Image 1: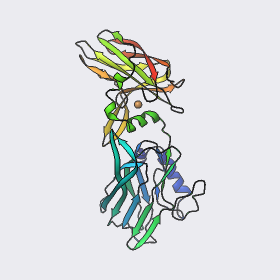
Image 2: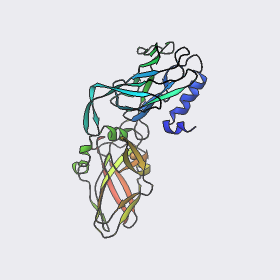
Image 3: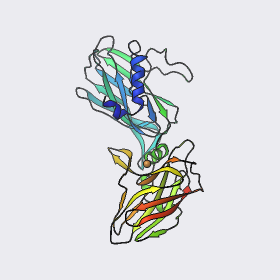
Image 4: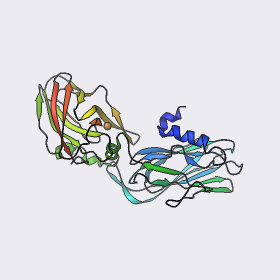
Length: 333
Ligand SMILES: [Cu+2]
């Protein structure tokens, strides 16, 4: 099933549950993936299992909760799309821009989804400023010509949602896993400050190896429960030949990966660079938050501010370089 790849690992479980426990009688409007990682950009995929008492669905309206921001609907063939904009209650940071308004409701209109069929409606958006453990409710109005079904019931804190006749679809916000903290940073970070990051950090030691000069090394303190750590430094190639950072090891971590962040369609993603990083002749390459970085996996003792993390960098030409990264705050300051 190719969809499962797109929607991640909770999908399998969600499908199992809906196929076994909720089949038939409890065919509510729900999200395909009912969990979302805090401070991540997601595809919220609503499933519409049926029409209104046998009638075809002609319009679907979805109200977006505070904390689900920068939303964009996916257009669907056969449906008109209306995006209603409004003010957010809070101000959100979108890659350095302060954003106060955005989509607050999405309407797919003038469609015709037979009661015999099932369909999904997708909204891309970012879960922002919502604490893990919170559920976001997206009240849905399903219209079948003149018949209106409101999926807008929200359980009060602590009460049971199962008995409700037409519950609003919920998205449960969960803590980040793999790159929890770094994703926070890259998503919420003020990009304008990023290039200055290396310079603002207390200058670590400068280590020379052949034509290379490595400086400004630091790591970020890890937050409780955060399984991975980020490391940064600057390499200058003063020579005439290109070099390459091939790999990194550290006694503080089971594995150190070289990562980069890439932005595509406004979504930032982390990617492992298996071939390392080219350090061209005459160039300076900066590993910094929101950009190239080291990712410490299987960290033995979580990095605390004031600690130091020794690393061994292996370059293609310059060979091995020993460097000590100072652990700064979790914000890298
Ligand atoms: Cu990473």
